[in-house]
Image (cartoon, rainbow, N blue to C red; front, side):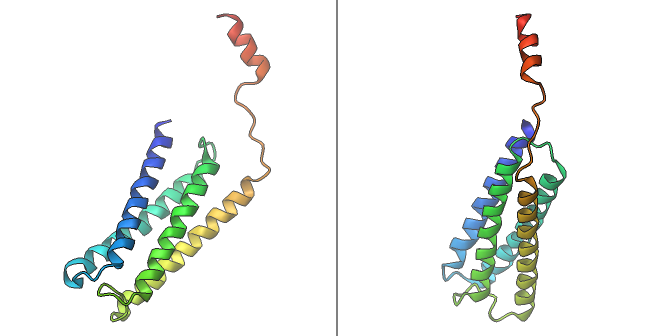
Amino acid sequence: MNRHINFEDNIFILNLRIRLIRDSLALNADPELFLKKIVEDIEFIDIALSRLLDDLVENISFIGRDEQFDNLAEIEWQFSQVLTRFLNSSRNISAAQLPILREKLVSLQNHSAARRKTIDDAESQMEGVYVEPVVSSAELSELLKKF
C-alpha cells in the first residue's frame, strides 16, 4: 500500500515540475538566471521517469499497475511536449542558440520515446491477462465463518 501511495505522489510531483518548466518556457525570462536550472530539472525528470518505469515493469504484482502505466504514459507524453517546446521556442529561454543543448534535448526526446514504447509494450502484454484472486471465494467464506 505504501509503495502505491509513493508511486502516485512521485507522479504528482513530476507532473508539477513539468508544468513549471512548460510555464517558464512561455515567459521571456532571463536565460542567465534560469536556463541552467531548467536544464537540470529536465535531466532530473528524465532520470526519475526512467526509474519509475523500471520499478513498475519489474513489479508485476503491483496493485493498480495498469492504472499507473496509464499515469506514466500521460506524464511521459507531457514531458515529450515540453522537450519539443524547449527545442522550438523563440523565447529568451530556448535551445535555439546552443547546439550542445539541442543535442542533449534530442537525446532526451529519444529516451522519452523509448520509455513510451516500453509502456505501450507492457500495457499490450497485460491486456487479456487474468490475475487470479489471492483468496478464492470459497476460502474467503470459510475464513469468515469463524467470525
